[in-house]
Image (cartoon, rainbow, N blue to C red):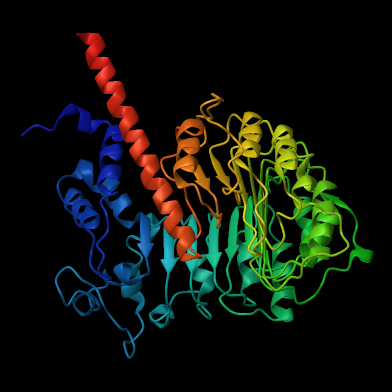
Length: 501
């Protein structure tokens, strides 16, 4: 049978094979996926299919067992059950010289490699130190440190590297891949030591082309180095700060091209130090998740954020802290939400920390919404119970200022029915998600009708889970809301049918 001419076009063939490669993997660990079985079949069909199918078959590897399965001696041990490879290599002799060639047969095709454990590295002890097992590898993810073998997995082509350890070999990664490494992620499942963090900062200073970085806290020298990288776009810092930053010995720096900045820390002190001593003129996204956020730290953070030259660029701000032990401020006049009035390009704002909604009322909500003409999502989630002060009239006034808003989380005063939807015809058609938190309610029918009339795109209201009577009341509101919508749809159908007659 003659092959269709379209299959002789390499681009078409690659698209077809790439679609085959997306077939879902099995849920059972160790089972060979249907995609891999299909690609293996295609590779053995004809010479035209062989190379592109083999490239895809070996492109993404989860461990090195499939490559070890190419070794004649190991193949029956690994694939002792049809279609599965669950294997333990303890007590197995290392590869000999001719077996190394079998192991490397398809290694040049591997582009992405995940190493979940290091059970089998001892089999590679015969490999020369300067050997690059995967000469075209682009992405490497290692869950454990392969002591003495890391150099085998660091070709000069490596662009993305994800690690779960800090080890002296970390400098080896930065040295071998300094000119190509773009994405470095280091997520430590344990508390790092001061020496490890020092090693991390030293290693980061060797990287020359980073685009994205996720790692534990860095020292000032590393931050200074990062500010000189024109390629850097995103930085995320996660972990406990063991050595506070010395702001007296730091030169103010500008991160010209960084657009995303995230911190996952215990307190805000480290974040405040970075923001006070740096400028981010291109920053679009800022996120901080702190274990505890005292009121004094919140004030300093807001001030530092407003001074980092990002007022005209920031579009997304998330500040979260769930520790409810923070006492309510007694002598501060700070209203958190007003600290973001100057960020005129805001698309999303989430404040979820104790007392973040203090002194918020109808007038203030309208004021801030008028300052953010592009706002899409506003989430104000105070873990501390406060008296609700935003009424339906206040909500209506605020929504008139924000035509693009599609998500709103806010504590509502649903007890005070201060608006007549029959007398006012305003509708906000963009809002789709409304979360009223733990708002109390009495007149369920009136609330349902207000929501039906004013927010036609809201299918149901999200509410808090605390308080059985609150849950029941809002469930009843949602039932009435659905009934009103169903009646309206039925009415439209009847009217349309009558008109057609």
